[in-house]
Structures are given as C-alpha cells and as structure tokens.
Length: 318
Image (cartoon, rainbow, N blue to C red; front, side):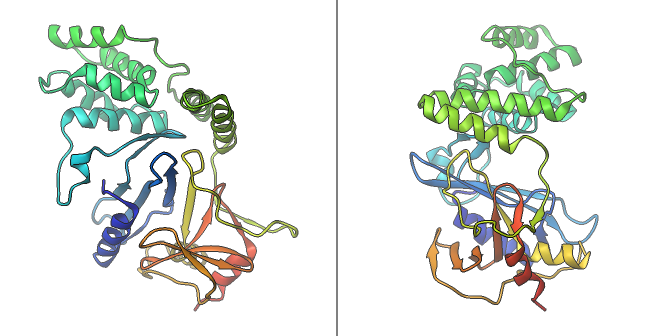
C-alpha cells in the first residue's frame, strides 16, 4: 500500500527495472473518491521469469471495498517510509479482500482465527470500520466459517459469539455452486447500501453500474462495428472502475509471448494532453484517448472493450 497513484507509478518503475511486468489477469485500474478527489486503485505486477519472485499487488490511495466502497488511509499511513499494518488494521483488509472476490479461503479462516487471540484487537473498532463499508454482514459469514471449521478455545468462542450477535450474516454466502451469480448479487446489494447512505439517486447509480459491471466475467475484446463513438476517458468516481490496458501487454498478447521482457511500450503518437496526476496524463487523439506515463502508455476502458482504431496504433509499432 502506498500513499498516492504517483507513488505507485514511481515504485512500479523501480520494480520494472528489477524484472517485474503487468499481470494480464488483473489489469491496472483507477477510481476517484468524490469527497476528497483522491485517486485510488491497484497495479498487479508479476515477475517476468516463470517461477521467479512472487506477484506484487500494489494498492494506492486507500483500499477499495467491493464495487464502490473505500477504506481511507489513516494519517500515520500517509507518512514517508516503510511501515506495517497491525493485526487489527489487517482484519478490515482481510474481510474486504474476501468480500470483493466473494470467496473465503482456508488462509482467510486461519488468519481470522489468529486474530481472535490477539489482545490488541478491539472488535468494537473493527466492527465500526466494517460498518463504514457495509461489510459487517459478510464478516459474520467469515466468523461462522471459523466457528464451523476450527476447534475454538473458550475465549475464542466467546469472542466469536459476541461479534456474531451484531447483525444477520450476508446472503447469498460464497459457494462453488453458481459462484459468479452469488458474487454479483452480494456486490449489487452492497452497492445499494453504500449508495443509499448518500442519496437515492446515488443508490440507483451504484446499483445499476454494479449490475452491469458484474453481469458476466469481463474479457478484453475489440470493438469491430463501425459507428461506435470515439473512446474517451470517463469521469472517475467510486462506481466506475477505469481499467488501464498496458500497450506492452497488448504487444505480448499479439506476439503470443507472455514472458518476453519488452519493457515499457509507448505509442508513436502525440496530441493535446492534460494532467491526470503528476505522473499520469491523458493524450487526446482523434480516434480516442490514451493514458501516458513514464512506465508506458495505456488504453483506458471500463468494460474491457478496445477501439479497433487504437489497437491499430499498437499493431503498427515495431
């Protein structure tokens, strides 16, 4: 976790020099929190050599929770230098990660089990942070899994029972049967709850965008029909997940070479530009927008559709 998108870009440049590249299964993405204009998101990096160093999930600006929630960085977390999250702080991130995937792993159960014995954990504080992102019901499901899977001590059992009495568990629960439909329904319900805390108008917006985004698993595709509008950058907000498709990744896909260390790739085009941040800028082209940085150029998309006119620019590069 780093403070800002600019810090993430700079750290990514350092990691790229050490042999990391972008993971094609989790494209970089950006959002913006409207109250503070904070940009937040994630870069997923993998080591270029197979069976090399582990993947790095680089989060910045805060931790995204499902479709439109955000856990903000605390003031101490915004200071320079390396620091570590406490076990109590990690509980929210643990629940948020599991809720986003709508999947509870054995590791999640084991991590929660260890937190039950930690005297430094204030479960009242944990629940208040979970309530801020409407994830208390999902945490109840996770604690029930701990209760069912583990042999608890008397003190652990007492902690679980005290926390479980706060609200009803979320439905639908994670399961292998119809897992995507369960994830979609849970995410849409959470989006409505968070949106309704602001206004009915926002609740409608967050609910409908969640329904559309999670209608089915998204895959990169090229828009081939004529008459499509020019691809422009959308307005950034918590319910619009802007995916950044690295030009380098598109080259790897086109050459069918997933492990070739091509390095940052840029399009040989120029046009009017405007700053998105200190490290990112939007270049306005007649056939669409691109995002430019010192770690390469990116094609922006929300629903994974890429304009064939922008793809042609990538295809023409040596």
